Amino acid sequence: MADDDSMSDDDDQLNIPDNTKHITSIQLGEVDIDCWFHSPYIDTEDGLHDKNRTIEKLFICEYCLRYFLNNRKYRQHM
Image 1 (tube, rainbow, N blue to C red):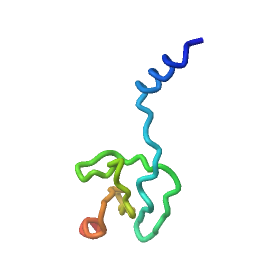
Image 2 (image 1 turned 45 degrees about the vertical axis):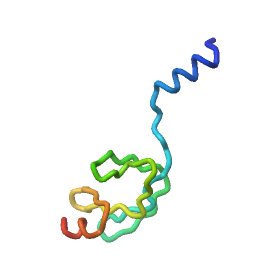
Image 3 (image 1 turned 180 degrees about the horizontal axis):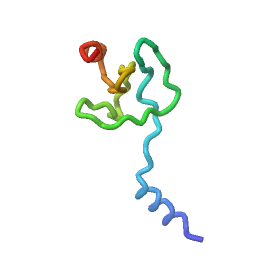
Image 4 (image 1 turned 135 degrees about the vertical axis):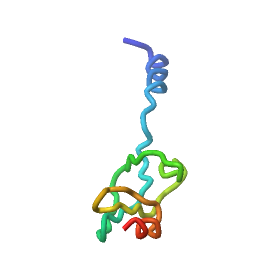
């Protein structure tokens, strides 16, 4: 059995993702849905997955599933 120091070094190399909930709710079409768990959306130039940022509502197109950070851009897309 390996000692505890070598096991902690292995854990550091695994890059286990942060499971903090960063998105409070989503709007899919006209339906608002509260998020219960971690939301693993990809990083964007807008900083969608910034660990220090909480997004109150993420807008998702019900037809193509593209997501937006604000309602104005979402409405322009529609």
